Amino acid sequence: MELSSILNLDAVRVVGQINSKKRLFQKLGEVVSDCCGVDQKNAVAALQERENLGPTGVGHGVALPHARLEGLDRVVGAFLRLEAPLDFDSADRKPVDLVFALFAPKESGVEHLKALASVSRTMRDATFCTKLRANDDETTLHALLTEIRSSQAA
Image (cartoon, rainbow, N blue to C red):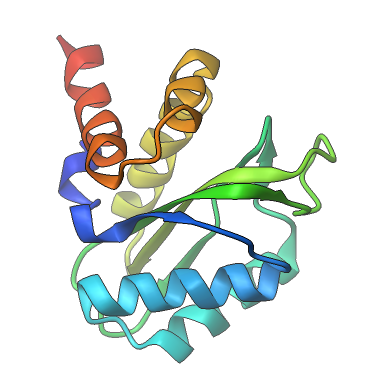
């Protein structure tokens, strides 16, 4: 799945100080509400509910929170680059500064899994993550995130 099909430019943000996972989820809910019309409270609650099952911090400073929501007709994403890393209870116990959240329709199956696999593959690339960390411009971050899959497929 191409990241360009799930990530709008408006859903890419560079964020200053976030003090807690709860505040991070609130910011993600705000972003996805602004750009995709998702109900912010439902998005935050769904992210927290999923996180209660186990941390979505995958290591190396990356978190991939995800949730299923009523009212969505397709998978949508939001990306945050945190200026100050946040303790996230990640598998490797390192703080998180790159967050790619996914929101899928409540009844989605394969599409949600394909999107999660695509994001996971992209964010496992250490060189690519270094490029993300080196950029403060949201347009550049969006371009990096949405062009990487196309160039890998070629």
